[in-house]
Length: 280
Image 1 (tube, rainbow, N blue to C red):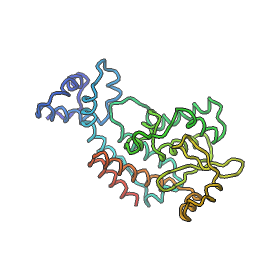
Image 2: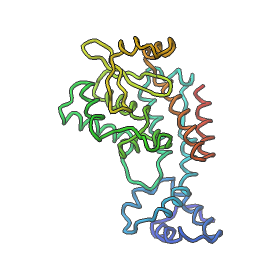
Image 3: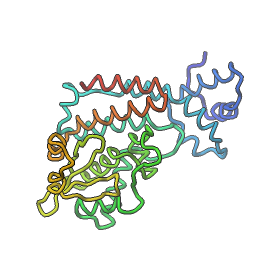
Image 4: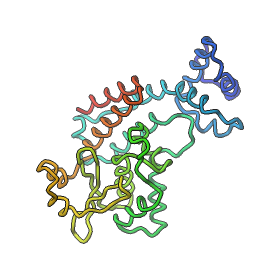
């Protein structure tokens, strides 16, 4: 059997066979696409033919196994697990990039995660942004980034490159974009690991301010939240704390595992569970 990746001419022929439901043909097409490394987005962008929704679903599914294989191969857990990532934002972002590549559908053309974050930082600078609070307004006051209310458990919310391209994510995804862009601009933005709703903290005139990125970047004085009678003592303690990258990664992987299970992506969910085990 030919184990070389398909040449462009064969890829064009394989695309024409996507809707052939003959079992032997479907199996052969899947085998050949599986050799493409899980990502055909750049090649597809050069093709005159537009795939139907069904064809996109079929092709993305065929490109899934090599993406799983790449994630399992490229994932290098730090020695010491999640605790070793306490201040290692560079390694943390590298792991987020690997997850982003895994969650990509393999057919949509988009920027890699780090490039997308760099571009947001450049746009903010060109827009005259000079503080963390101005960055908050730049990202969340308009329509650039918003909460994914329509599909809160979409696994793609954990794919920050997709979130930037589509302009929506869950609370953790939005906060991570805010924090990672902020780090590029040397702004002090902290993560707040509140149960069920991740948030951020900035400092205005020396006072800690909590930002709810999922609620259009809504501002809350930390002191006001701490005085609220609706919070338990453990919740108030979490409001005060700053969460490190290792714990953020654990939370993201837990969220992703739940989302993949809800989407009935059993193999993907098991792989993410295995990644979690490498950090604990």
